[in-house]
Amino acid sequence: MNASANNRLSKLSMTSSGFTLIELMVTIAVLAIIVSIAAPNISNQLANQRVKSTTATLVNALKEAKVESVIRRQVITVTINNNSTNAGTLVLEDAKENLIGTYTYDAKSTISGKDSKNKAKSVSVFSPDKTADNEVTYNICDSNTSAAPRQIEVSKLAAINTELGGTC
Image: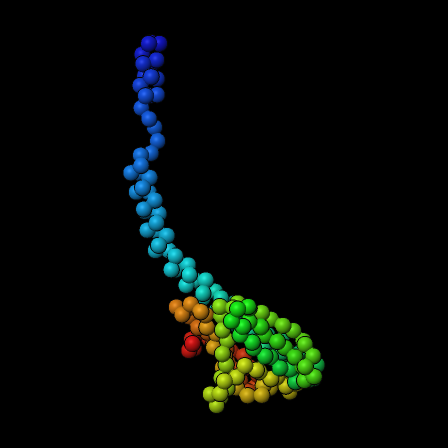
C-alpha cells in the first residue's frame, strides 16, 4: 500500500495545478467587458447626484435667507457665483452687506436664473414681510450633459418649489 500511495503522490506532484494563460486572459476579457458596460452608468449617476446636491444646497440657502429676513426684520440677499475652477458659492447678506452665511457647491454644477421677464438673474432678495423681490426660476445643470437638470422656482410670495426638468 505504501508503494501505491507513493506512486499517486508522485503523479500528483508531477501534474501542475493552477490556471492556464488562456483561462486568465478570458477572465480578464470578461471583466473588461463588464467594466466598460458599467462605467457610463456610474458617470451618469455621479452627475445626477451632483445636480441633486447643488439643488439641495440652493434650496437651503434660499430658505435660510427667507427665515433670516423675518427674524432680523431686514432685507436679505442671496447672490450666486458660479466659479469655473473652484466650487461655486452662494452668499447671504443683509441690507448693510453684512455676511450672514456662505454655501458652496460642486464646480461641475452651474446655477442660472431668470426672472419673470426672462432676464438673467443671479440674486434673490427676501423681505421681512415674507415676500421676494420678484419671481425667479433657477436651473441647475451639470457639466455632464446627460445628467437630468432641476428647477427651483421662487414665487413673489417667497414660496420655494423644486422640480425635475429645466433647460441647460
